[in-house]
Length: 458
Image: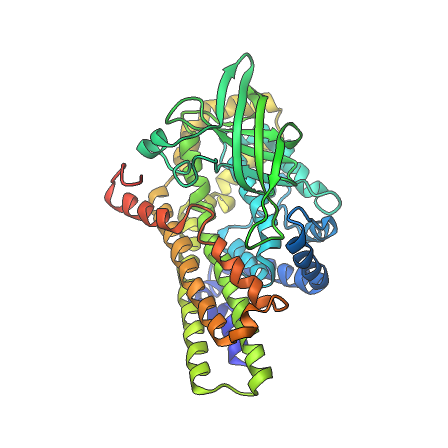
């Protein structure tokens, strides 16, 4: 049927991709189709486990099905974005975004476990010292099928969320309580991080801490030194454990620094510029899932659509088409002009091949000497990347929320029935407005990048 094709086939989702797939971008489209196929097989094989996990997480926010994660590891879900030179799949933003959409249509919480792990890897991938952390990256694909090594990213603070995720004047004003104090041979980290996805299950945490006002550094920490003070009982995406973390006099040696204070805030900017657009895909995935459920329930209940139902379903599908165009366009720009363009750059791949097989000390030496050049290459067109990514995140999620509202109105009492999946998806969609910087602040970022107003936020 045309309806199913409209929802799921690349040719219908973004017709331009078919043109790209017929030319020199054929590998790009194959990359998308390959990871989508893996995601769909995982869902079919694990649907009972996923449904059970969703039910258990409603009762216990700390619930985690380790076997489900191992099954994801069998499809390389923990190493998808890791460069091929370190044993990963080296996929780019758009293929990953399509993967997130398909997974989120069934369980955005389970997807977020894999997505938050990928987010936790970005500070390493964007570090000039990546060569010094090759063993950490290589460990992930080696172990993911049996004992997945899980990462989390620690950025949000009790006294600062979206402001901590900025730079310049905003970062100077931000109330950052996680401090990095210089000590002999390293730094002492003290502070707290909140709403950290994977925080309670991660083996490693990439953490942002401030050595002084207006400055940011990134560190890699073994989670065994970090205290989990609580796991949040959230409204939505409950299968993704979200924790508050406490850092109490944790010593981090110099060789575990990912970004020095002179580049830390720029690294934060790059990390979020890459991660925001796929949040738009999470949102459209949830919306797609709710559309499918709504259509199925109406068909079973009424056998056919009345004019009002037909009108509203057409409106929902049209909005879905619009929302998808935004994040797809942003992801394509990131993949060919932004930081992720280096995943397939032949010269960068040769460099990574060399860096993947050198001692840690040499990796740090090379990173220290070449970090300005490395950062300049990575941050090329970064302001445009930020603009497109913020638009994709904010407006794809807002439009997807409107789609879900339409579906809930059509479902009437069935929509709020907790025995129906629709009610869960309705709760799940709201979180896409919040993480990766709130939609409202993303709007201000768009203005700031377009007009150059450094003090517009706060």
